[in-house]
Image 1: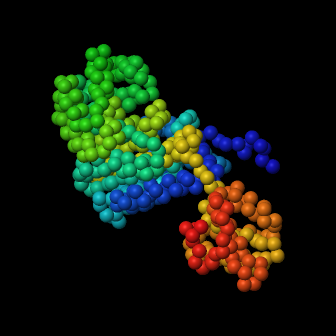
Image 2: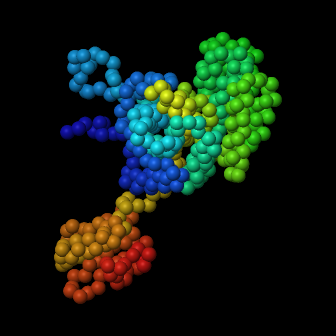
Image 3: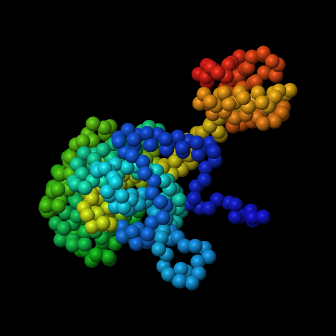
Length: 440
């Protein structure tokens, strides 16, 4: 017998009761429909990738779960693991595209809805196992900037459809950061981005201290870096705010042009849904242009629930060919966990069943089963009771699980079937060959 404490939940690995899992699956269906409405096709990649591939994509080594046989022996036990569980969908997608290059049609537009695994310390909104829902576009030539505006729109529509209660997507362009830092004479702009991206976590004092300690930057340069990070705006006017800082470089100008285009394309949406935020950098090193981070407006201190951006070299780095891409990820588990915790999600049913066909006292199982088959054959989700038992027990079962209708096959030959609406208590004659839930 397994010891009781070993049956308890493992931190960072959420499991839902059926009523919540049904809601989660309905979310997945809604997201899939929206992704497909924009022409994205589904793929599913393996859960395991070569460690070498995963480690090439930035500061991720502490997050990776390596894979090895429990009873590994000899050389296998002594050598570093070759494979690991993927920590996101983007890197596996890049490997998938590189491996299937000759069979895919470009631009390749795909979506994925799978689990990922990260070895980080579990806390509110951070899990070791979670579902992500991604859309990406990969092409063999330059990807139009219209895709940079389309990605946050897809997220906006998705979260609105799911009824999360409002969101704000913060947008930046890493070319702005790179060009601005280069204009200041900061050669290691990648490290500066990594540090500035921690503003939400450690604040201005923490970032200032890291820039001084790790990059030996003087107070004047740090002040200018922080001045850029403070700039925010809901329209193209944000470009002028950056230009007013007086720093110039070709890369900076290109980034500002791209950000201005995206914000202009998003102007038709409600004010505040999209905000240009010059502090956003995204931690993963493969991003090269537009980047996004989305938060729930009702829970501003909760971690980012969606993120992504443009990457020029991720796919091509695997096959030495230029294949730029852009994408965005919806953190399904992170959103779902928060909303169920806050009581926003209120499931009412513990089963997808539409109808319970009861086993009446003195009835015949063959008739119960035949009735269920007729209803099921017409597309209804049907349970049947498999034994004679008190009717009260069968009705209680239907009520406890939230089954909306209960079907009563007749005991006497020629008598009509009846169905009961469990919500209003009305019971009436019905024909299994024509009845629909809308009748009741």
